[in-house]
Each structure stands twice: as structure tokens, then as C-alpha cells.
Image (cartoon, rainbow, N blue to C red):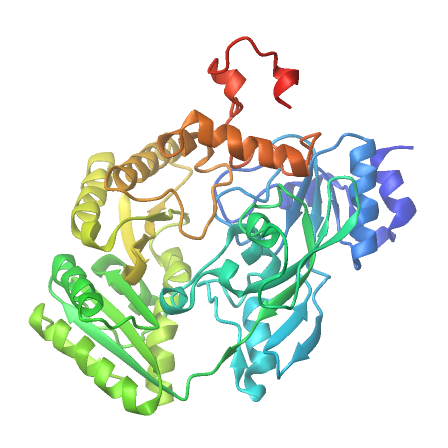
Length: 473
């Protein structure tokens, strides 16, 4: 039987796509690099995922897990004819334990839907990527997604207790548990952020966070990026760790105002800061933020007086990427991390790179933890433009690494940064990661060609003498 016929033997017709137009649609995520798809399946249970994995393994077809397709690093596209396992139909919020503050959810649950579901209980799911109205919890697990409020609450890995995983052989296993400190190795921590290279996640036990009793949201305007960055450093130095600290530059502010008209001042930089907690604490912390802004030369300081004003500020921030459609038909959104103390020089270098390559640059980023999101707006139909954009993006990554930064804060490595892994990790580091991956996926069928560059094993570098490759496996 053919591959598609084998899939249809265990799944319904409407759960299998292999028409060329469908394959074209699923050959790309929100990044800029397309893949090659052999078939797409929409399983509705863990058992169906396991069955599809076994069939793909029998045909030696690569297996790529996919959520909502909002990923930006090419992590959900096959580099060779592969099976897309779309997990969006596993979208049930199965069980919420109000006392334990946990919930079992399917990987296809939309991030924002989970918090909406638990809000009446006074609880929410803390990681809040900008795409939270569309992205899935499973996709967040794949890339260890963060969001504006990860400054105080931590990224996805800090909010996952257990995972049901389909292995490369199609076995259903459980990792982690509801207890605070499960025995054994932290395999949940290994799988979160592994971009589907260790297995396919089919159920997730998440931590829920109590809604803060009081929140203060501030918007501060500055006449330079440098002044806004100085305010960020001053707040942290004062001992206050806000729930969020977000920075937008003028091109991004203008794009947002054209898109949603949220009342942002058109200025060189806007800093959004939010403090949350006990009513007695939030006012004093908001005062620290405001004073840091004044000391740094803020030209305007607003504190949201109502929930509507707060929602409008966050609408502007969360609309940033959608607003870019007003600037150009295509965009390339990057994701690196630098120390807070190096924000100013890194941003200066990024602006210089954009100007030198002749590309339109807009910036919005998680200033509190140094997670940068330089965004290039461009027209891919312009000859040579995509090549210029990618060249500029690689330069931005190298600049970030050069000041002691990291490749990615939340988007993942995928294809986008795979070949830059050697800039951060030594050959021995890459070998250790490759060995771990092989332990989970000996045949290399789970999302191959992602994260680790070709030749990541030490014997590929010629570093291990007098040993044949087989003796290292």
C-alpha cells in the first residue's frame, strides 16, 4: 500500500490530506522558509498519533509535529518529503484542578483560550506570547515560548509539570508528574524546547497561576532608545522585577497607531511596564518605575486608570506584528537575547546593520530580560531582497552573541538559526546534544535537520582519534 493509503487505513478520510494544494499550504509556517510535505494528518487521540508515527517509521518518512503554524523559525516545516502531524484537533481542556492549580490540556488548545477558561476560577496560564490568541500550548512547549510576562513568571518550561509523549517508535509514555519534585531525570525539561525532535507531545499538565489582586500598567515615552533602556536597567537595579517591561521604537509605534490607534505617543521609544501583586506593593513599585523613567528623561508617564486603558495599552503591544502588514507585504521577525546592560549598544548595531543593507527595520522587544525582536518589513518579490534580509538577520545574531547573548529567547532554533549553533556551542557541546537526541530518536525521523547543524557528532569534527563512529554510539 502507498503511504497515504496506509494512513487512511487507521484514520478517516478527512484526517488525511495529500492533495498538492493542501501540501503546498502546509509546507510553510510563519517563517520565510518553505518545506516539502508528503502528507498531513489530523489525529484526534494519542492512539491515532502513535499509529501515524508507526506508519511513517515503517515507510521511513520524517515526522514533523505542527500546531497553529505561528512559529517563526521554520521548526514546523519538513526539509525533505515528510509527514506533518497537525495536533490542532487535540484541543480539549480535559481537567482543571482548582486546588492544585493545574490543568491537563491537549497540545491543540489555544494559549489564550486556556486562560479564558480558568479566569472565573481566579487562575490563568502565565506564558503569553504575542500570538497567544492563535498559538497552541503544544507549539509553546515545542519552542519554550515566553511572552511579555515571562520576565517575572518564567517561560513555558517553568509551567509544565508532565507530558504525554509519543516516541519515535510510536510508544505512548508519560514524563514528569503532578508531584512537586518527581524522582529521576528531568525529562520534561529536555522535551520542552526540543521542537518535536524528542517525540510528539499529546497531553500536557500545566501549572496555573493565581490572578494578581492588583495590577498597575504604565506607559512611558522617551526621546531616545538609549533613555528607555536606561530606565529599564534602573528599575531592575532598584530591586523591582515587574511582571513585564516591553519597549517599542518609533517605526513600530507608527505602524501600531496606523493599525489600531491605541493612543501611543509618536516618539522615539515607548516603554510599557506592568507591576502586579498585593495592592500595598503595586503602588510603591509603580512609583519606582515612574521615578526611574523621570530620572532617565521620560517625556510622558501614564498609569492606566481603568481596565479599558490597560487593555488598550496591551492591545497596542500585542498588535505589533499584525501592524507590520501596513508597512510591507512580508516580514522577517528575529529573536535573540542579550544582557540588559548591553541593550543600547546592541540596538545601535542592529540599526546600523539595517541601514547598511537598505532594509526597513521596526523593533519591539521584551526589554526586561533582553529578548530582542528586530523585525524586517520587506517585499519578497523584489529581486535579491530576501537574500539581503537573511544576511542582515545573521549579522544581528552574531552581534547579539558577541555581547554575551543567546541565539533565541522563545522562537526556537529550527532552520533559521541551526547553522549558527556553532557560534555558541563547542563541538563537544553539539556532540552531547546530538547523543541525547539519538537516545530519543535513533533513526533520526523526528523533525530531522532542525536545531543541530550537519556534522554535530564529534567524529564528524575529527576530534576523537582511533575510534570508529559505531563505537561512539
